[in-house]
Structures are given as structure tokens and as C-alpha cells.
Amino acid sequence: MIRGEGFSQIRLAFRGVDSAKLSDQLESGEIDIALVSRNAVPNIMPHQPLLDEEFMMAQRKDHPRGLRRPTVREYVKLSHLIVSGDGGGFHGFVDDILEQQGLKRRVSVSVQHYSVVPLILQTTDLVSTLPKKFLMRYAGVLTALPLPFETRRFNLHATWHSRFDKDPGHLWLRQQLGRCA
Image (cartoon, rainbow, N blue to C red; front, side):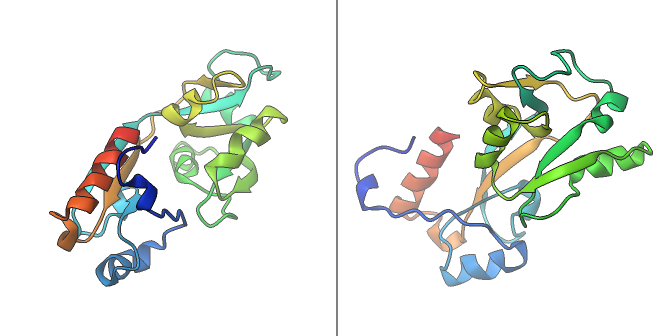
């Protein structure tokens, strides 16, 4: 949680980022700081890693499939929920991994925001592939299981325009983000 002197004077707006426009938005000052994956950080912008963790499979606590780690064949037979930045995509990085093995999963639901995933998983037999730290917040209602294949890690970086490198207020905000992560 971000706390501290001066925080009451800050206004935060969380919104989706268009990677194609991000560099220009940081340059123009439209965006002060962006939270993006490492591969979305514009080449010329400074950045700070916030998170680096593994992905896991999530399911509701009383899921009929039980509590054992699925095999890759079992995994692809399950109905999946995906978080898609555009709120409608049914293909993600996991699908690319599976395609390399000649496999395809069934993505039944696509949502734009992580915040709705636990609500949907709690009341369905869907499963989802999510960052471990995110899942730990819902340990009372969701079960996290290792994936049956290797994936890239989930990472989150803060990026900004270099004119803010030494700005005291911006430095403070970046420190708070680091503490939160």
C-alpha cells in the first residue's frame, strides 16, 4: 500500500496502455509513469523492475479435478479463462507454448482485467494461468498449482521519461511502487 507524507496530494489513474503510443505519451507528459512488462518498455526510456515471478494454474478450492498437478494433456482439456489486454483475445503466450508441442487448449472466457478473474473462478470449473503473487492474495478461495510445462516468468516494470530521473516527487513515487511490489 502506498502511504506517506504527500501521498494525499497525488491523483492516480490506472488505464490500459497502448504500447505503440507509450513512448510518445511519456515524452509528452500525458503519462508520468507506466507499469508494463519488460518487453513493452520503450528502448529509450529508463525503467525499474518491480516484479519477477512464475505463472501457476488457478482453480477454485473445490474444483472437481482435484488438487494434483495436471499433466499437459489434462491441462489442454480443461476450460480456460484468459486475461487479455484488449478484453477479447482468446490467444495468449500459453497458447504459443502449447502450439510448439502440437497442442491447443480451449479458452472459454476472455476478460480485460485481472480483478474479475477470482470472482469467475470461484463460481465455475474454469482454470486460469496467473502470476503466483497475484494468486496468493486469493489463497482462501483459489488453489494454485504448478503448470505442466515451462513458461516465461511474469515481470512488471515501471518506466518513465528520463527528465524525471532526479525529480524528488517522481523518485518518491517510484520508491513507493517498489515497496508495494
